[in-house]
Length: 212
Image 1 (tube, rainbow, N blue to C red):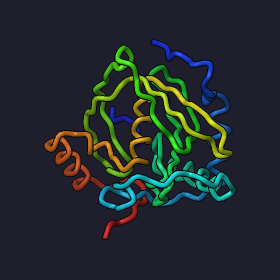
Image 2: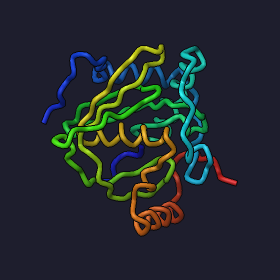
Image 3: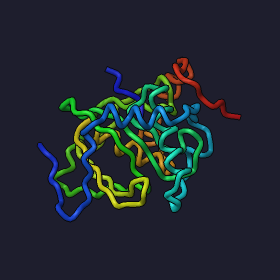
Image 4: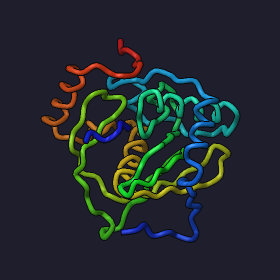
């Protein structure tokens, strides 16, 4: 997910909620220094428009992919990145994202599944949203301001991540990617057309893979 243009979560004690707010700088740097930055795939690339494969091998190759994703995310100055955004057909995303309280969250999720929120937690936030795969474009999109994602870590251990505000948006955005949806797919036809026009008129500030 691209950086923005301009009630506390309830923990379920039976869930493996991770702590992703500690040692953020050191953990992100370690991943990034082990990784190699790759160019970003953009809208129209087939890998972005289909559901990705489940991660089944929790091995050194997966760990290297996650390192490369952190390196790629930093190069593109993003706050979240899904594997298919660097052309890899696997359900894994990484994030380095602030929430609305200014708390930094750094982590990764394999095989993410979003919790279905009860009605009393579905408070919609109409903030601007952008995407590294739709460079230079932004549009308002209503999403719940709270999200829980469940999945696995790079070792295959079950984990859950929860977020509010902008970080909740990031978790939803990246999970969408791995099921073949870009944020512009959730816009009206007019707003989607406007976002694509913004992209056509702009120049990406990071390396991208040309389609065709």
